[in-house]
Length: 607
Image (tube, rainbow, N blue to C red; front, side, top):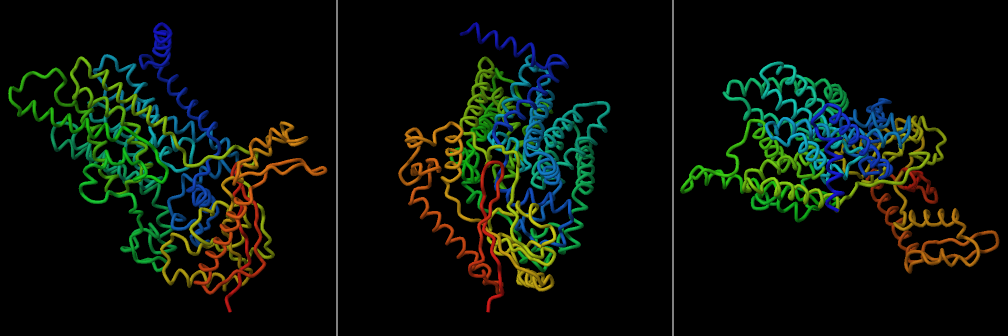
């Protein structure tokens, strides 16, 4: 066993250690290929944000729907759409499977970006060539990276830009020549990341503060920070400015409907729109937040993504600070066995991590926004471990802690929702609509359903009612004015209840038919029957045997449908509208091999 381990280590070192340019290229290419392959194996992305706004926003930006539709994707309809445009073009105009491969490969660039940071930070370490790829790989095994691998949420997609900016900034601080080019490219990448996804503001703040701890002399530090800030701001304006201008011209608020306390756009309530559910509750919880979220990952995410790194960094940071104080002011002040202080690059990295985390905790506390920071966590843990533990065992302890973080993240691997691949990545059954050029379609309720709109008649107008959009009375008036101006049919669209067992049932029956298990006494198929879930329906004539929903599951589905219809009726009533009796039909729509049935109803004005 020891001999086999030695052989594997030797092979990895010869092929992937960063001691030759060929090995660096090989490691980065393999990382991207591996990420693309894993993305392919995970299946088609079907996360709730994609179903709500990513697909719609890409289509809407391409086809100039800003003045035609009214918040079909709820308040998220007006987010900067450039990332979504790219996904729409590849996934819908091309192939959803190709989009999964492209996104996975791009996300694999996180490995290269973390390696670039680690290469700068670990300068002087004799084992740097082997440590760098190991820590970069560990960074790609973080909880958020794994959860978003190959998906459209954007955190992994912009992470290589943020991390590359960090690497170039550290190199610029260390460089004595050609530093201006490094600053310009770093600002370009950071501004691009910020323009594509505004939540990257926490990293812009973190990197700006880190620069202020860089070169000797405050004048040089401020000059560096100013150059980075100016370039970042210009690029941010070029990328996001045109969209903000369009939204401001249309609604009177460039960030519509957010921050409407300041802008007072008439269609939204004059409030600041923010998701405050995830913020720490009180000072004590904030102080213990890294420990708290490690023990309770659902405190910062709907989907639990176990991550040990933040508790490890928190405890190591406290220990490192205590040891530093004792060495400086404690009795004896004997010569330490571990390094004292941090080099410029090390200090900048740790400040970047600390400030970005604090900004994240104060502004969002939403786990997935930490994608770039979690990728750097193993490197930060390694640096702190070298200061906390005795020199003789510091590397071993650092490796153990990083390995434990990787183990916990991989063992608790969750995704935001993936479906099996299908020949058609997206399918929406065409609803009956006599005159779409005069029709108005209302997306009713706060369900993620705007993804269907790009596949419905484009001549219709689509608007939402009863969603998370902070609608003002003027919004309701605008909806009714739109209906009156178009003067045609009015439709309501909302989900139809689908038993959580239905998708599994379809797959079992499909495979049973392929394997010839649907004829005869169907004994093998009958083994999949479960009380309250599936029942075996025996073969009758030419109809083969199959599994069907149990009566209890059917009853639960019917109750769910009645609740959805009642909710839609109540939301429409607030606008003086009602569902036309007997007009509703259930239509089919699918992402990959998973069905998302929806209800399509005619709407009339209430008497």
